[in-house]
Length: 85
Image 1 (tube, rainbow, N blue to C red):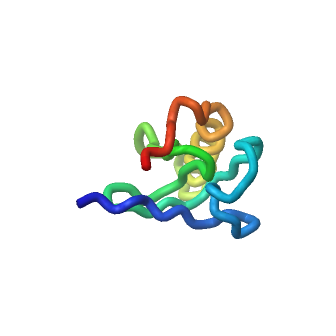
Image 2: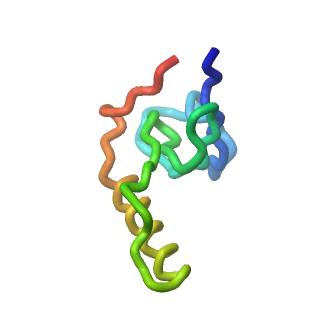
Image 3: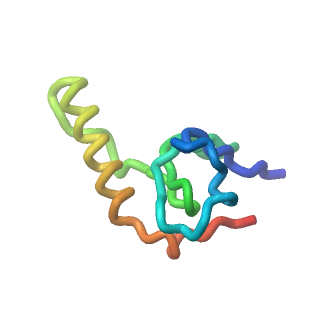
């Protein structure tokens, strides 16, 4: 049986279901049975890197990973990732 994902990291400590209209979304840490990583506080979007981060040093790879994650988060449309209940 699948267990629902646990969303961690809401800045104000209020579960998404108790917030007003989906006008403010945040990147949160998500832990589920089949996924652990970054997701959206208002929908089911999850960041899944397309490959190994580019860079010659750990810092460059970290920066590339964060740029890709942040860009994909900012450009995703919550309506395309409805939360399944």
